[in-house]
Amino acid sequence: MEKDKLLIVESGSTKSDWVLIDQSGEVISRIESQGWNPQMGLESNVVSSEIRDAIDHSASVYFYSAGVSDEMTRKWVVEKLGAGDKVVVENDLVAACRAGLGDQPGLVGILGTGCNACHWDGQSASMNVPSLGYVLSDEGGGVDLGKELVRAYFYQEMPAELRSLFETAYDVRKQTVLENIYRKPYGNRYLAGFTPFISQYEHEWLSNLVKFRFEVYIQKHVIPNFHKKRENIAFVGSVAFAFKDILTELCTSYNMEVVNISKSATEGLIKYHTRQFYD
Image (cartoon, rainbow, N blue to C red):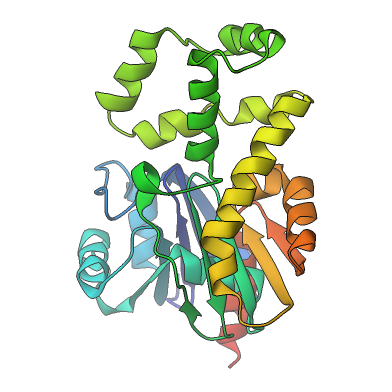
C-alpha cells in the first residue's frame, strides 16, 4: 500500500473512530475502539494491531480528542501512537469546528458525553469559558443528564410512572450506583449510560429536564463566545443529535441560527481533509 493515505481519528470519552481515506475521500478502512481522553490515560487495548497497520500505512495522521490542552499532552499522544512527526494532534473543539463549519466563521458547540463551546474564525478556535471536565463542568452533556436522572430518582423528584420504567431499565440500587461512580473506573461513561432513557420515552418531565440543562449549557458555555448580535452555530455530539429539536428551538430564541448538527465529527472531517489534498 502506498503511503498516500490519511488516517483521521476522532476520539471521545466513550468511543474512538479511526478512518483511513485516500485522496478522493474514499474510506479504505474504518475501525471503532474504546474512547480515550489523554487527560485520563491511554487504555492498553486501544491501539490494536489493525490500528497499528493503519498508522504505519498513512502519510499523515490527524488525531482529534478531548483532553488535548497543551504541548505536553500532544507529545504524549504522539509517543503513545508511535507515529513520529506525521501525527497532527488537535482537540475535539477543532474537530467540531472543521466538521461543522469548515472554513466559515461562527459558533461551535459539543454536546456528547461532555460539553464544550467556542468561537471559530475559520482557522482557529477561541473560547472564553474553559472546560473543567465531568466533575466540575459538562453542563448539558450525557454525563450531566445522567447525573440529573440519577439524582431525581433518589430524591424522588422523578414522576412515579418514570421511576417504575427507570427501575426496570437499570440496576439503581444505591450501593450499585455509588460503586460504579466512585469506586470503578470511568464513572463518566457509567453516568452517561443513563441518558438514552430520556430519548426512549415521550414525557414532559424528561423534555423539561433536557431543556433546563441545555439552557444552562448555552448560558455558561455558548453565550460568552458571542461576537455579534446574530451568529451561525454548528453542533457535534450524540446528545446534540438526539435532542436536536429542543436544541434548535433554544438556539433560535437566543438569535443563533443552527446550520449543522452532527452525531459525530467524523464525516465532516473526512470532507474537510479531502479538500486539503488539493490545496
